[in-house]
Length: 197
Image: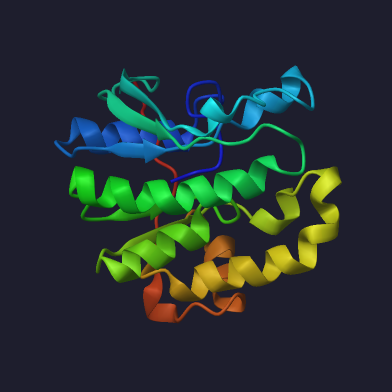
């Protein structure tokens, strides 16, 4: 789960991890968010049909990985309504995906768009949720959402406290997880991998 566009975002850890898991024999379904629609203007995707989920099969972007399935819950493309509509469509779609795809583990990168939904449905379906801690997410809010920062901190704390395990990219991210309320024994150090080829 993430709140970026898997298909257009520069290739980094999210694609590497997902496609490496697939290369190791796992079935991977990646839930993303059409973040770049805003570049096309403030009133794009006004058609209600854009609330429908899009599915992209056999996606491969990372070197050495295997293809995965991308599921993109719809959104209503008006600035200020987009994230809220995506929050609702993600809530509905994540439950469907878990049932349809027989999901046995959730790896979560996002907080605001589908973080709470992932934790909620993980608990409801008794599926472990691993939060991949690579950023202080509330600090990444764009300028037009800065006023939400205090709320963002609280949502981030819920994710850190509710996830079954925190996969910390660095020691400092592990320390941040502790400050956000994660128990020591729920933090696993998982540094970035390097492919020397």
